[in-house]
Length: 163
Image (cartoon, rainbow, N blue to C red):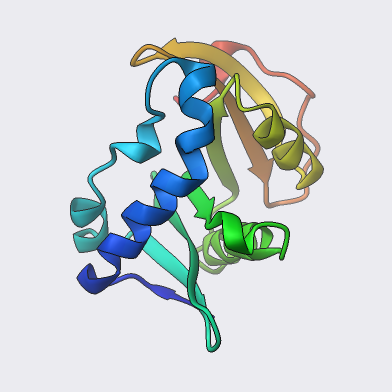
């Protein structure tokens, strides 16, 4: 089940982010942005959703919001104990379906260039790399998935991505 997070979910969300991203600290040289995010504010803004099941409870979460014409998928994380069970795919599909229901034509996201697993996962899910740039000291790769089924060129210039 995927539902809107409430403030009681914050400890599970923070714990999940810590567990999911800690392996990247040595690779990146510091904590990735999701490890230091303000989840209290994001929950209050109504942009965090959690995946749960009746047996094990909390499994993962996703953060996304409408950016006036596209959804920005800011974060998706799954507990390592639930990895490989399709929870991440279900969360991303939930975001894409919410975008379609609201008449939004695309989902955009970014990930750290050193998170190689993410780069291949997003490509397999139909996301197209549209830019690379450094922001806040992180080397980020930007992806977009067109929900209108229009064909997009394989790679757009950096000025075309994310405004």
